[in-house]
Each structure stands twice: as structure tokens, then as C-alpha cells.
Amino acid sequence: MKFYLCIDDTDNLDSIGTGTIAEQIQEKIINRGYGPCSLVSRHQLFIHEDIPYTSHNSSMCFCGEAPDGTLNTIIELATNHLDTVAAVGSDPGLCVLAYDDRCHYDELMEFGIQAKKKILTKDDAMACARDHQIHLSEHGGTGQGIIGALAGVGLRLFGCDGEIKGALKNAVINQNYTVADLKNLPEVEQVLDLTSKEPLADTTLIRLGNRSKTVLYHHQYVLFVRRDENQQYTSLPKAEIRQLGEHFYV
Image (cartoon, rainbow, N blue to C red; front, side, top):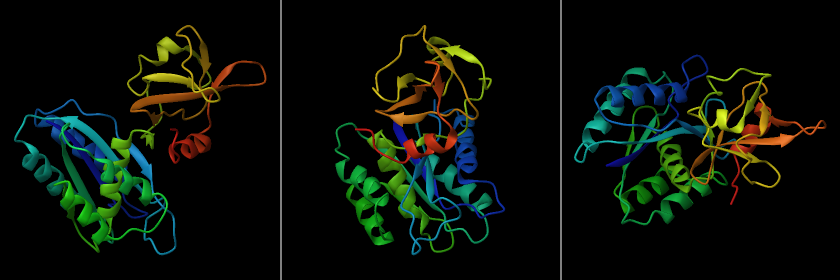
């Protein structure tokens, strides 16, 4: 069974972030003997004064493999962890999808795309979840986080939205790496030229800047790079990476 799991609105300004909580849930699932699991992706949603959020209104999603019939166990693991660690004053939501390749998820992906553009309601989220038989649950406060949790699953399925949580952990800043070396890192599946969107040869040298990150592009972890004034390929600064991760590339 392939599953998608997303959480939203679990933190406050003084607590651990939602991304860390998602990784903790992932660790519990792996410790149960399930997996492998993907890296966690961060999906930026609509910013509006009528939408409550802690800092950036983003949800955190990952997918993984588990034996058939274990969906309820995964939901229980995630629920118990959320109920334990979610911050005071937060409005957590949990979404878990047991993926079925015979199903069409266009409506779910569209929900995610619309959640980046306009205000959606809990009723909108519950209706979409019912249509696709998706687990969607509130875990405190207003439960407003179910909107972002469902949207995150839709955007992860869409495959061209979001940034991978954390920087390249095993890379050194201000160092040169070949594309082949970079693709050996768990966070990098492809290195693309930002302008052409074309893959670079494995022998191409890339200079990594501070906090280099990958984004989801056509269902791959992609490091976008550009040529500088010296014709050296370099990674993008964090602010630009985040901007890339907030838009569609199709």
C-alpha cells in the first residue's frame, strides 16, 4: 500500500515546527517496520488576514509504503503523536490517503491548487475527503488545519509544488560538486538549469551556496541552478528557492 500523510497547523511561535512533527510521525511509522518513506515536503498555502496561521501557512506532507491493511495503524500512530505534541493554541489537522492507482485524484489536486489561491472552508475539505474516501481529522482547537492537510496531499500528488524540508544535509557550502555527486545525496534526484529546465551533464560542476534546497518538480527532488557572471553554475539563495517552491512549473 502506498500512502500519503499530511499535517497542518500543529505549532505556535514557541513550539517545534510542523515539519519536525511530520518527521517524528514518519520515524514512528518506520520504527513500526513500514517504509520506505519519502522526504517531507513543505507546501505554501494562501496568505490572507482571514486565515489563521502561525508564520507561513504551510503544510507538511510525505508518502510511504506499508503492508496492505495497515492504514488504520498509520492513522492511529499519527493521531496519538499529534495529540501528544501539538502546541497549545494550535488547530491541527491530519490527512491520510491510501493511494489507489485505479482512482483519479484530479479533484483532490485541484483542491490543493485552489488552497494556494483563495480561502477554502472546512466543509469544502470534508466534502472532497468524502468523495475520495480519505481520512481527514481534527486534533484540537478549531480543527482548521484539516484544510491545509488535505491541500498538502493534493499538492504532493500534483508533483510540481513545494520545497523539500531542510537543506542538503551532507553537502558543504561554498564547495564545488559534480552533478553526479549531488545526485548521490538523498535530497537530489535531478539537477536542472533554471532557465532552460533542462538536466545538466553529470560532469557539470555546481557551486553550492548557503542552505541549498530542492523542490518538487514533476515528482522529483530537483536542485535548480543558474550560471553566474563567471559562467559557473551555482545553487539558488533560500528566498528564491522558497519562491520556486510556491509556484507551479508545468
